[in-house]
Image (cartoon, rainbow, N blue to C red; front, top):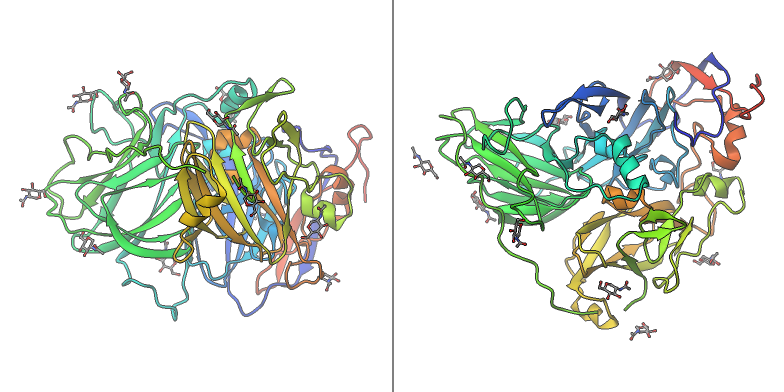
Length: 562
Ligand SMILES: *[C@@H]1O[C@H](CO)[C@@H](O)[C@H](O)[C@H]1NC(C)=O
Ligand SMILES: *[C@@H]1O[C@H](CO)[C@@H](O)[C@H](O)[C@H]1NC(C)=O
Ligand SMILES: *[C@@H]1O[C@H](CO)[C@@H](O)[C@H](O)[C@H]1NC(C)=O
Ligand SMILES: *[C@@H]1O[C@H](CO)[C@@H](O)[C@H](O)[C@H]1NC(C)=O
Ligand SMILES: *[C@@H]1O[C@H](CO)[C@@H](O)[C@H](O)[C@H]1NC(C)=O
Ligand SMILES: *[C@@H]1O[C@H](CO)[C@@H](O)[C@H](O)[C@H]1NC(C)=O
Ligand SMILES: *[C@@H]1O[C@H](CO)[C@@H](O)[C@H](O)[C@H]1NC(C)=O
Ligand SMILES: *[C@@H]1O[C@H](CO)[C@@H](O)[C@H](O)[C@H]1NC(C)=O
Ligand SMILES: *[C@@H]1O[C@H](CO)[C@@H](O)[C@H](O)[C@H]1NC(C)=O
Ligand SMILES: *[C@@H]1O[C@H](CO)[C@@H](O)[C@H](O)[C@H]1NC(C)=O
Ligand SMILES: *[C@@H]1O[C@H](CO)[C@@H](O)[C@H](O)[C@H]1NC(C)=O
């Protein structure tokens, strides 16, 4: 049982209630029920516990349309706390729905909680995943699509099909084992493989791939064009994605249409999503390989960290064979040079108070016991500090709940400086930012001269090359508390994150939605859970809802009845 729950389950009883809808009645609702359980799967040929949603690994695709109210009831049947986060989906005005520990109390085991948010004009491809306890390394992820309304044109013809592909590095050890490794101050080491849609590699080489591994097959019709949405949901490996003999026409990334350009392969960093339009223009003399291989590593050592799926034309004349298509041979070179306005710098893990920790600008983030916005709402003092440094700390690193004070309607320039030897990707919840520049070495004021201010792409996850910087511009118009983190799960777990708190000085319910009635309480506010007996299931209909109500009580007093 997870230790973070500050009270026992003292008493459960069934509560029956009748509630009316609170969402905007005219916008349709899409509802999902997510039941998180452990199942046994053998993606790399070795049985292991993975996190399934509704018995499936990966989880179902959330398929929504602009303006939909998305309602997801998450039922936690794991043995530890859970939160689901919607990477890249800008929860407009409602960080209450964001599913990270700075904004939400966790959903305890045996408990269910309903997320309810409206997806706005962010047509594109995203994914969701469990944000706590390293769980993403055991699964619990799935695709999240926002479609345009039928009256809104897209910059390409309707594809013949819409295919989601989740790629990611994978360990045979489960997330609890991996956590133990990190807690013991060790690094995770090389992953055991790469999964494509939860499946191991096609046996393209008998020496490299053992027998009896189930692989993914993508079925297509000759001559047709498909939209393939690819997300890197892995732990920390950048992957090069390619399909043998097929061009990848890049069309969209995380809700922005891009200039359409053909690629033979594209690097997809952890946390990023791209959509490609792929025309099945080959002669189907055989099936084709779909490959996701580790990038920026020594290929001869990392050979088995390769995901291989099969693209199968309906008129295919045989199996794919022979070597995999080559990865790009280019090497990123170390040239340029660069100081700053708001430079955020990571460093290789350090030891603070005897613990191995990862930092951002010298601060290793400690999750608040009372989520930040909840603490604001209830005026809990000392839950966090608004003192995240503007410049990286020069003194010894610290472990703190240190948050960035964002100015509502201000602009923020964030320089992400990667002082490690491995690739990192960074993500900001609640926003799409503009990536305006990248360069090797240290960022300086002069680097601004190289910024691309005109057609920078708006996205929510950007890579930062080793020994290099990436500059992003953010227009702070979304009120709330938003997570800024590395997407590399190991560094994130060790504290490489912070939050940006953006508050409208003029309090109203227009720039930030009120706290949802079903908000969970924890930390300094645990006792309020006792009174959280109201449950709103938002839809356009009336529902009878049967619900277990958990009564909070002190650890030692045996409980109380309300
Ligand atoms: C993770 O694996 C260990 C064995 O390596 C096992 O004891 C443990 O039960 C597993 N945890 C989960 C949550 O499956
Ligand atoms: C999403 O739903 C629409 C209909 O609402 C359907 O046309 C489309 O194929 C679905 N997409 C996926 C990926 O399931
Ligand atoms: C399989 O991989 C091994 C190790 O890289 C290589 O030596 C061998 O030539 C490959 N076999 C084939 C049939 O390509
Ligand atoms: C991309 O490649 C396809 C063939 O695979 C070709 O038909 C198309 O014209 C190319 N598009 C661009 C923008 O280069
Ligand atoms: C099919 O295409 C491949 C590669 O593009 C080529 O080598 C092969 O000869 C073609 N086969 C036929 C039957 O046209
Ligand atoms: C990659 O690793 C192999 C085997 O350890 C080694 O021989 C080779 O020199 C390495 N290549 C590079 C470019 O470091
Ligand atoms: C945070 O920034 C606002 C202006 O955006 C300022 O008024 C306020 O004093 C700052 N708070 C702290 C604690 O620095
Ligand atoms: C970044 O790394 C380089 C080389 O490892 C080191 O010389 C430099 O001091 C580091 N900078 C910071 C700010 O840690
Ligand atoms: C960078 O510019 C800021 C003002 O924009 C200035 O305060 C700072 O001293 C400059 N830094 C360097 C290293 O020139
Ligand atoms: C915002 O909405 C909540 C509940 O819906 C209400 O209690 C509160 O008074 C509203 N606040 C403002 C400033 O309108
Ligand atoms: C949520 O929990 C309550 C009681 O625990 C249960 O009755 C209800 O069916 C659950 N809802 C879902 C969708 O699992």
